[in-house]
Structures are given as structure tokens and as C-alpha cells.
Image 1 (tube, rainbow, N blue to C red):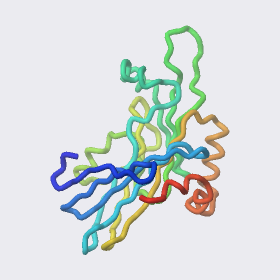
Image 2: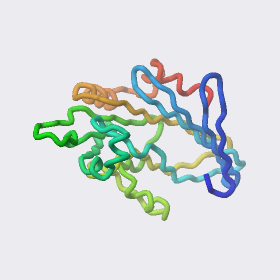
Image 3: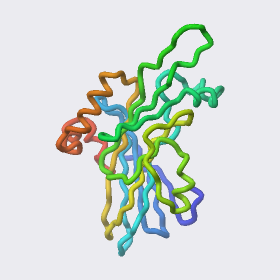
Length: 219
């Protein structure tokens, strides 16, 4: 939005809405939509397609920003965002690239322990990122064309899950990927998900056997 030569629209497909942006200058079409999976949580499915007649080289940065950890409400963040950020911790498990967003403790004005024992989890499938960011601190560096460094431990900042990958699309070629987020995950949920992401022979194949596969349809 606001970039010359970019058209943005919402496409109703059956009972779902697909958001589409077309860059007339670069001859690229980007589509995404949200669905809910009972097994995995919130699923954002994306498709980037080369509409031109020549190979298009792309430096991609895509993902989610302002991810809320368990224990703070949107109302609390609207009123006390800086205080809320001070309690935030974002962590990336390097083997599975599973991101965890949680609080060091639950903000309270009572003289009692208030541990944050649950987390928001985010992971992706479909991309092979050169860097994974847990904050927006390097976004300006990306805009300047500089290399990004993976962030594995970020504290005191708003959470993000941003994927950076360089790719080249042939004429008519497209690439799909998914970003999956779930709320209120406990230690057992995190261990099981981390194990599955690490040891599944093909996460893409496994997810197609669940309702997560439905998010690929018609995009």
C-alpha cells in the first residue's frame, strides 16, 4: 500500500477471503489468507507468483509482527505497551526453528510470584530462510539491502517472526509457504512440537494429512 504500481484487493472465495497484491512494475502477485486449524492453530498461507516473462530475483522478508505472549491482553498492551515489552522474551529453537514468545513473569502489582508458564509458538513450512528474525530491529537493514543475522534470543522488545530468503522465480513459477501460530502452549506442547518439527521426515507431507492442508486450497 502506498507503493507505486501496486494494486491491493480482497478476493472472496467460497466462505474465505484471500488478500492479493499485484506489483505491476515487478510483475509479481502475492496472495495470503488466514484459516484456523483445530490441530495447529492460526495458519497463514502465502503464495508469491512471477507474472512476467523473465526470471525474477527476489529478496523476501515475510512473517508476523507484534506477537503477544501468554499473560498480557491487547488492552494491557494498548495502555502499558512499554511495561509489557519489558517482560517479553522471544526465543528461537535452532534445530526446529520453532519460535517461542513468552513473559519472564506475569505483570502484576501484587506482592506474590506470578510466573509465565505458557508461551505463544510460531513456526513455518515451505521456505528455507537464510535468517529468522524475532524482532523488527533489522528491518531497516533489509530495506538498505544489507545481510540479516538470525536472532535466537531477544528480550524487552515486541515479538516478531520474520523470514528472509533470496530466491529466483521463473516465468509463471510460484512458491507457497505457511506460517503457523498457536496460543497458550505449555512445556509438553512445546517439547512435542519441537520434536515433530525436527524428526518428521517431511513436515509438508505430514501436514497435508491434517486440516492444515485445507489452507492451501484456492490460493
